[in-house]
Image (cartoon, rainbow, N blue to C red; front, side, top):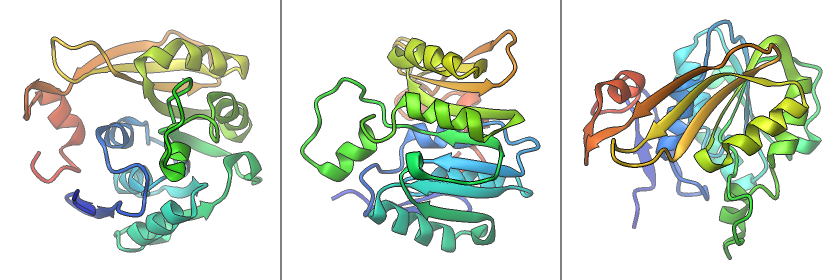
Length: 235
């Protein structure tokens, strides 16, 4: 049986009630997304609340709204946040993002969206909702984010590398343009499996970077350690 929680340096994430457990993708996005001048942050599909909590740790002036459609996951996110040092700065809303209504504009919008666009649905309904784009697709993500994003704001996502063109093309439809891009490699001899992209309303040259996680099994690169050392216990 897998561990029902994951211990970080300053907080603990319980994930036994969530379809998607704590993983590298969420940690990467929470550590990489640009928090400078991000007083108002929206986390779409918060799951366990991990990314929202990481952003609260990183930027002390932030107020964070975390949206989650699944009731069990939203309840667990609320519990994780309540036990964290930043409970007063994070609000969890259990709602479908397509139905979410607010007058607020956000400086930063983050999402670790479901990513199996064309994959067969798995039999576990909760896990299926968390992993497929049937409930939260890229079209919805960028169409609504373009409206909710403040003029100088950013939308940061982590996606499979094979979805990069689809995601960038979809964002362009709503006049959101890539400004930073980080291709992630698990090991030097492996192809890139994930890419983090930051979008903004302004069109300019995209800064392209790469990150390798491990030199070999459990031997992490200095770059990955530098990115995640404020969170992982053993970094």
